[in-house]
Length: 291
Image (cartoon, rainbow, N blue to C red; front, side):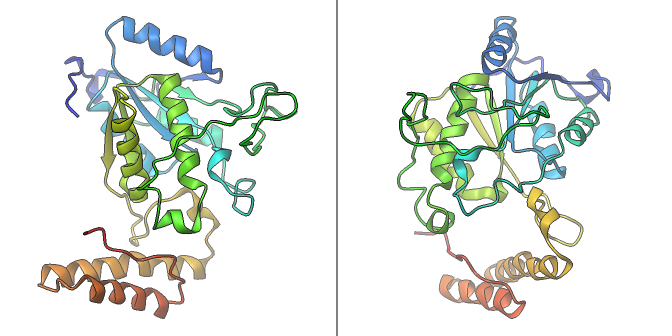
């Protein structure tokens, strides 16, 4: 999608480090801020996250600085993408630490959008200690008429791969990203290619629903040992982390074999599966994307 942005893009030297971002929790206030900035001719980049930030998130923010004047980082653990058996209640969180990391980014961040509950239309969704209550989103009308019942689906791309074992995941992702796009009204949105299927789904959703937003995907950022950076890595035991390294190792060997002339996708797939199984891992899926 072609899009012309304001040419006065800030450089890293044009900002002071340790810039403290404005924290906005109310969606109407967030929309008001965005519209005020856009009325001044500013462009806005959005980096959606669920918090517990790492260098992968920081790389998205740095990339966003190349495209827009202002940066909004959303921190919201989206209940709509978790099934009842998944780890919503234990998803890692460190909001104060996240703010410190954002302040250390060259160029900084202008706004952190930290809503309480984007699916609660009656209550505040805030617990007694001020922390967000991680409540599930309901998909039908409650007796009081406040239940969330509208969902966005990208019907073909959400099938297969992660969608096989997580049937509500992409419905929840597409819906909350739509909400964030409607609230923040960005010109550009940044997503990591670690979640490749998610990135492609968001691209297709933006195309199909005529959002005037450029979706940019950034390459995977890895730990020194090759493990893809993820907020959930904190939950891995030493043994689990060792097993997880087989994912990147197997993909790297398959890539090397392909570059040397191995073009049979089935054999490359089996190579990956064997490597992970021998390391003690369990395959959810291994698929090629060439049709």
